[in-house]
Image (tube, rainbow, N blue to C red):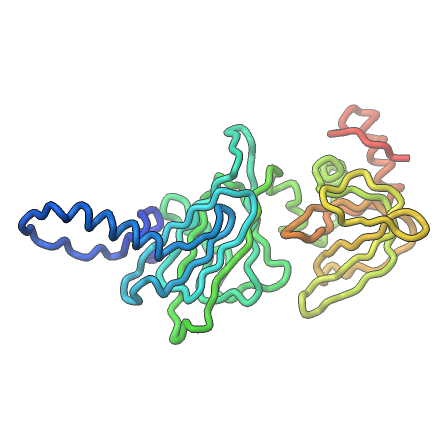
Length: 310
């Protein structure tokens, strides 16, 4: 276990190892006031977040030889952390702006482009699990996990020159389970099972019926954009699909380049989630296949929700 793990649970400014305590000295009536001012001023210089959703700070507030663990507190459903000139470590404490003990929450993390200078871990009771290695910020790099699995711990890596280093990531807290789009995270190109399709129809951020107009590829991002002509919108939480000339709607959703998506004839049912402002493809069965599995489940009373399938 690296030294950072032992300090993950400490308070802001806690160090590893702790310096020796000074010897006793004559009491001073001004000492408590001086200590209080030092704590307040130190905290103000170490954190200068403009709101409760995002934090931006600098490792230059730390002395290079003192490996401090800075505490960052955010209370929001989405935001960003940006750490310039990273030194020492950050312990990022996320809390939803509304909390229900019975509600399952999923936390998703996406590194900022060109993020470097630190490793990002999932931390719980001093145990660290690596989420992103220093410099690991390729396209499609998103990690999702249950909120109860732990907090985030960001540890600066040794650098000869920190002047051009900035570590950062976006985060999202949502009420859906990490497994609800597990196939898009662990096996993104695998076709969905009947059960996954039926669940996706009920839980996705968007559910539309339509055809593929075109597919464009962006090798530099390792992503493909699927351009859709939509004939019916069952659900959309964001305005991904806009009215098109001549009727219907048009919109674009993305998936990984490795999935090899190509234009195909016929209509499909497209489902998916919004991740960091982008519509990401989930399950996409052919329309006739979805109609068959929906009616089969309906006859057996196994539909998780109801929708028109005409």
